[in-house]
Length: 82
Image 1: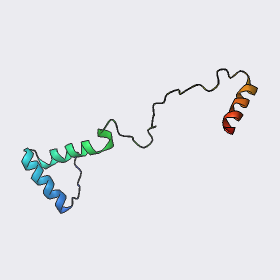
Image 2: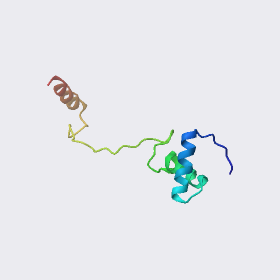
Image 3: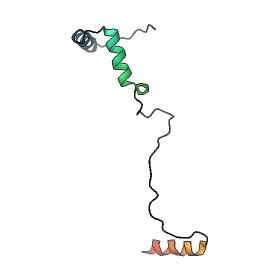
């Protein structure tokens, strides 16, 4: 695919110099650098619309039994007052 990009003069010089140093064409070098820097080329990148997942731990259990709501509320009231 052919796409025309306008590069700033300093970027064009760096691209030319680096491509000569590496023995690669400017096109090959530009493709390599774009692949590395764009999110699709990095599996760890968070893309827009992709949900962020965070590992959690269960923590400690504050109330042994949730069947008696009265006890649970009393426990929470005591915790809030402390």
